[in-house]
Amino acid sequence: MITSKNSLPMTLLTPLDLRGLPLKNRVVMSPLTRSRAGEERLPNALMAEYYAQRASAGLIVTEGTVISKQGIGWLNSPGIYSSEQAVAWKQVVAAVHAKGGKVFLQLWHCGRASHTSFHEAEGLPVAPSAVRLEGDAIHTPTGRQPHETPRALKTEEVPLIVEDYRVAAERAKGAGFDGIEIHGANGYLIDQFLQSRTNHRTDHYGGRLENRFRFLDEVVRAVLTVWPAGRVGVHLSPNGNFNDMGSPDFREAFLYAAKRLTDYELGYLHVVDGLAFGFHQLGTPMTLAEFRAVFKGTLIGNCGYTQETAEEAIRNRHADLISFGRPYISTPDLVERFSHGWPMNPPADFAAWYSFEAHGYTDFPRYSES
Image (cartoon, rainbow, N blue to C red):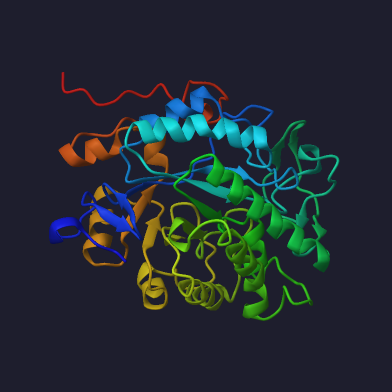
């Protein structure tokens, strides 16, 4: 249940009880791929420092963390597919907890948004169907490469990936995380199954809405054997065109998914409702109010929010929390600046976002009144 201490009016800076997990405010640090885990994809002391700097958020959701070698699609992103990686994550969790923060791990499989050079032993990227991602080239270990046509997964292979999610969830729990978020957004594997643009299957994972939802449903059911429902979130992006996404029946597909997910009494549904990350132009953009009508749990809005628009969304009860992405790159003390009306740091130089080093990562100053 969603509650606010002492019956305070709901604002961005009031506490929230997330099904038994107390959050000190309603500001969420959105998942942000930052590429600091090295070629071995091992979390490290630099990453621990970065997340600890931002621990005043009510909740941190880590960058997307790949559940298998097959799922890799980004340079130097962290993994959770080995025991060594799980142990390495403990230092990050401990650093956030030492600052009084809460942190969920986001579970990620890139699907067709990948390239063979990331996983030569596994071969071509996999997807629900052999539909190539049209668009910019992908950055790979061998430089910029054109996207490949992925290999369509065989029906009997899908449960093996579901098991990868379950094992990753188990490792996340062992690492001490407060919960997990299932990455079903932005054109990655789960999103590819949900959307008719990328799912042309004729088996029980394709066609009807119920079938296209089945993969996400099986992933949710699998991780719920490890985590209580209140410690699991799902991330969806109904309006986005990132990674060449957008389907004519997007509204029906995402409302169906949200309605089905409400039955599990999950910790939250995290919706990329804003359009700052791109819009597919296939109809009127979906709103949080539409999701509120069918999803009865905690709702997080995301993408392009300011403090003012976040306050409005919470005040109108369209959302319970709001996640901030790019503002957190250059402003580690975002909550404190919201609290005091202090100005933000200038936006970070895009070239430094993925420098693989401390520059553009942990070197942004906290606010000083002097």
